[in-house]
Amino acid sequence: MTAFAPANIALIKYWGKRNNELNLPVTSSLSLSLDKGTHTTVKFATEDAVWLNGNRLGPDDAFTKRLLTFCDRFRDKNCPLHIETVNEIPTAAGFASSSSGFAALVLALNELFGWNHDRKTLSILARLGSGSASRSLYSGFVEWHAGVRDDGLDSYSEPLNIEWPELQIGLVMISDKQKPIDSRMAMRRTVETSTLYKAWPEQVAKDLALMKEALNSKNFTLLGQTAETNALAMHATMAASVPSILYWQPETVATMHKIWQLRNKEGLNIYFTMDAGPNIKLLYEKKDSAAVAELFNLA
Ligand code: PMV
Image (tube, rainbow, N blue to C red; front, side, top):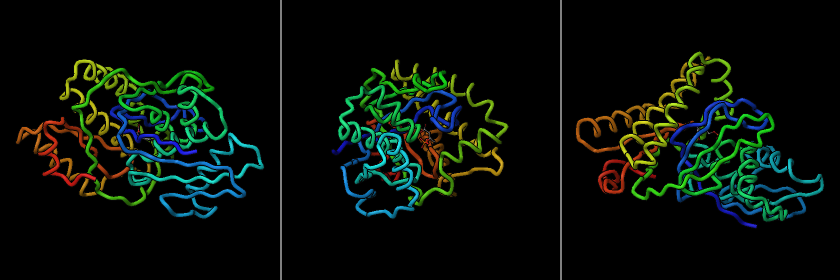
């Protein structure tokens, strides 16, 4: 059984859990799915085997363990699986491949085991693998509702009924190296040690309302400004953690300055967002695609 799920980039970020086991978030979040994502094939087999981008991984590999532990939630003891994952975007470099990865895996398992679950249930199951994966069950703009229940049954994603084909996301690759600290650990440290984290829920509530206003009125400047502010506020909560978490590389900062220079001095209406890695995601309108492609080395 083979399934595809798109990667998604959050415009309003998910950062911090109220339940680490169930990946229940402190706040809601909102994303846009990309065209690219993950293709995953799952088959019954005689022994567990995990393949990533054409290479068989060892049983002790962190990726193998994470995937198989996830599958253990759903299978009997004697049910070895062959899992093949192919990412169209760099793996684990803050390019959102875990979002599409767990969503594609859940879709493939749904077929293999004949569950026939609806999207809402699949979104809840994908969330158990990786929070952001709950948003990768859909294309377009998606909102993940934080929910309030302890069992997480009201913490799932839904598509927003908004079409905005002019809006573009460009991936600026700063580094494709594995990140030094994964988002799970980084979130935990932020929630536990960052004095700025208490401001985060309020920031998200404000930004989520502004983002919805931007989407409903197709106000690109409001969208870009809100996404950029939200991402920088998230990174500020991390920087205030003990020990501090800073995913930025010198080139990340140089790229931010370049974006601000182009926007404020040269009138190019571009903004950025960033996730748990050094890479930058540009936000711009289709009419500026040629200019952006000339100015940046897009992945
Ligand atoms: O789903 P995770 O555990 O990979 O966390 C994703 C966190 C961010 O990418 C930084 C933000 C988001 O909402 O996608």
